[in-house]
Image (tube, rainbow, N blue to C red; front, side, top):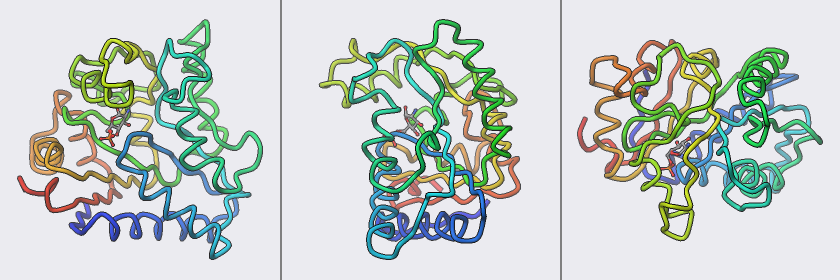
Amino acid sequence: MEVVIADEYTLAELAADAIERLVRTESAPVIGLATGSSPLRIYDELTTRHKNEGLSFAHAQAFMLDEYVGIADDHPQRYRNVIDTEIASRVDFAEGAVHGPDGSAEDLAAASADYERNIAEAGGIDLQILGIGTDGHVAFNEPGSSLASRTRVKSLTHQTRIDNARFFDGDVEQVPKLCLTQGLGTIMDAKHLLLVATGGNKAEAVHQMIEGPISAMWPATVLQMHPHVTVLLDDASASRL
Ligand code: GLP
């Protein structure tokens, strides 16, 4: 595990550097996109490089980590809409190149299996951007998730719903209770994992992820088993290391 501690702007540049290298060298790069506030500076940096330096995503595909179930198609917090707003519509991905789990499918188990198949057909994910929840969740793999899990329906913990209420007018009741999420096994199949965490509220989860015993109770600890992980931290999130 490579751990870098720097200010937020430097972290975003380092992450964008890794993505740029992939996109400029591979003929069919596959990027894993995360939602949440952590990757937003990375998306801003990629957008700037697209506009100013001609960084193109026209030959790339992207796969989202997760999606709420039971949220209106046009809700701004539907993850598909968040990804469109924050990155997909700001750069030049080809039509249909950005994929997400179908949280509005009638058969969620079938939608999960389809999503796994889509990722496999694209040749797997080259570089997966990740954030981490305060309870150590990755994507929406909450504590207790199988470390070998695949894309499936999960219920959100009350803590995650409280954490995400800030995106729903501060009202926890508006935060969906279910989601579709890539499993930890799915995420571990990506060739390079790039996790970004900032702020003191992530310090305990970061400490467990890097220094704790591998346990389903801290899902991010599974990253210790991956051969190529880059962890990007600010001083506050690294304060318990
Ligand atoms: C959300 C997402 C995760 C994200 C995490 C942290 O619930 N499903 O993919 O990494 O929580 O979010 P943030 O970056 O806003 O702290």
